[in-house]
Image (cartoon, rainbow, N blue to C red; front, top):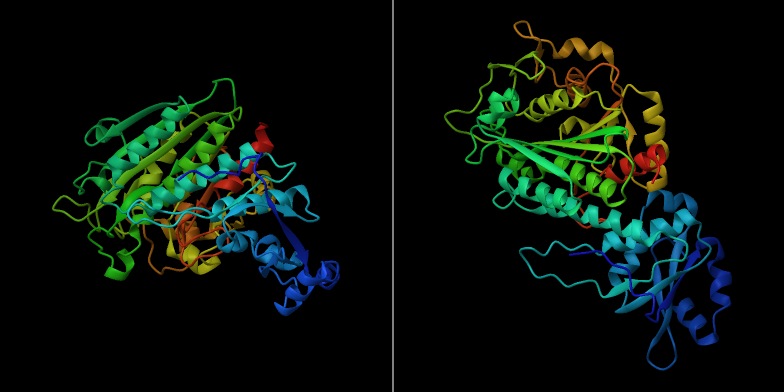
Amino acid sequence: MTPEFASKRAKSLPVHLIEAAGAEKAVKALPIAQRKWAIAGGFTGALGQSILLPDGKGGITGALFGWGDARKRGARRFAIADFAASAPEGVWRLEGELSAEEAEEAALGWLLGAYRFDRYKTLPAPKAKLAAPKGVDAARLLTIAKAAYLARDLINTPTNDMGPVALEAAARKVAKAHKARISVTTGEALLKKNFPMIHAVGRASAEAPRLIDISWGMKSHPKVTLVGKGVCFDTGGLDLKPAAGMRLMKKDMGGAANILALADMVMAQRLPVRLRVLIPAVENAVSANAFRPGDILTSRKGLTVEIGNTDAEGRLVLADALALGSEEKPDLMIDMATLTGAARVATGLDLPPYFTDDAALAGDLETAAAAARDPIWRLPLYDAYDEDITSSIADLDNAPAGGFGGAITAALFLRRFVGDGIPWAHFDIHGFTNSSKPGRPKGGECMAARACFAMLEARYGR
């Protein structure tokens, strides 16, 4: 499906956004019949509370929506999507004292809440549409929402329809839409072109592993390289996951999905950057030729890696891609991956941690994330833990014993494959909303991509 605002010519009904502190005054100002209705309905302006206003003729003349207070709105993003989900059919407009940032967030929340994944099941389309608030860049918001829909669709699609071949097709579709160049290295060609760890992780699958490489933009512009983990399904390999651990592993390509969404935003808005997108697309399967615990792999960078656990495969495929991306010394490199359960333990399902050694980049990301209402949280690249990823018989161990600080040691592992002096950030995302929230239906989720896009806009202009 495609996000949309209502036609500018359509008649609309007002949704009055009423803060809790001003609810009594607002209710008193209503016509007497509506005032009695709002009082009988117990309207207090609490965030998310709504009540329809009758016109006295059996119809609706508008609605009141509780706008709470600034603190509660800060804790509950996209609250207006609660109203959008239950509003009667028709076109609605926002009425209230909204800053430009609040109007943008509310409009985006409405669009994001309208998403439905209906590839396999007919679902009712949202009945209510929103008229784009005055002053917001409607085209930009639609670009962002469309990209978020893309990420959600890719993650929600099960692996029988979203394996490495289908992920490549999705990447080709994005590239074609923006007239970007794309090349794909597949199967045994990965060995010939020196991507040994991508090949090792994906060779046991019925669908050959591949490295997707998209480039776009003018050579004179700053180089921005995006890398996404595209593990289309993760059985754990020979270190097999239990059934419960495999249930949601269709989302293990969430990094790739979000990187494609971010790239789609960048190209649609034509940011003045030289963009490169690298996606190692594999399935970590079980077969006679699967890589084994105890194997030692030689990476593209030349570092050797002892396989402590075949279920720590995402960092292996990312390592070869990061090494490739570093070779042209980009001005900025960002990777996203559904990498560790330790990240979820550290910050929960809703707050993706990120890692960077670059203070300026961290500052830009924090500012952009707050403005975009796309929360992120910086965790440390703690150098003292670097010794934990070493092996007695190889340069590195992909799964150090102990298990503590797992998100940090995974990030430290990846850092070994990033070229010196390259500003780099690594995002360890969940990529999934486990229970529905305003603007975020249960299922695949676009995480950190909007924050990164806002940062790129601020750094490089539009």
